[in-house]
Image (cartoon, rainbow, N blue to C red; front, side, top):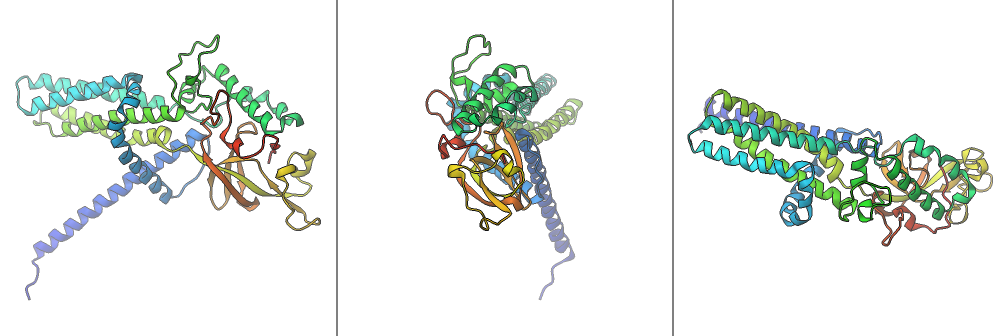
Length: 404
């Protein structure tokens, strides 16, 4: 029986090494993308959450799926998101991409005046790169969107929620709307306010006429969720065209100075684009809906739960005690809150109706988590004029809001 030659064995081993190297490179890229998405997403929410390597890979997988789903929408939904191309001169970046492709095509046809064409390619790639950087860093100014208010704004409401008359759900809904409206007036000059106002403001001022004294321009009515999707698709279109230009630039003929400079420029643009767009996905493309839940918690008798009755369940919030009348523990059923994150050690919830608090509840204190629905804290669930937090739809208007 014939034996394989050493040359064939070496070829097979080299082939396996190359495949292994490519596989490790892909995993490393996915890990970095997932890490960036995790950091930017929870920075956006204003929540400090740890993660495991598998979590990063899962986030990277969601990111790839989002891109695959969004690519057909670049064509089918162009009429809806095309207005977003006029923001931050994105349309000009797209124009520069097409001009770059034309110049590259002419250069590869070996037309005269190649130095002029290479200069134009360099300039068009540079201008497109600057437009992408400027637009995407502007997007990344959005942060702490769950708690966009300053301590000065919130300080006036601390005593208000302590008033027994302001504990029912209907009172807290009105108070929540009042806080949002005050932030629209007082937070105009704060960093990231315009991004929050455009993409994460549940009052959605773009759907309302400008109030007297409000000089901010109002765009035609589009809900905040649709605005985020439109901006995400517009930036994706520009990035895809830019990556096409960059890949074409790598195959420019010639080893002269202009060709080398263009390749270096293209490589830099490629790396920055690949690192920045996962951050854009985390800000605009990732789903911002959370589970609306009610927590059943263990509450120590004689502790904070019994002080002034603040945490004592009333009406529909009453839950039987765990071990009869002599038990040292009681159970508390909370009002609806948003479940932001949970693991084996803690549960993180967004309690908007208690002054927009983000609460970390030890897992040992949680008896049960009752999911009511899925909703976004950035949506307004009032079909007509006004404001209704989505989490308030699942209980009666007389339900007391209990701090926990």
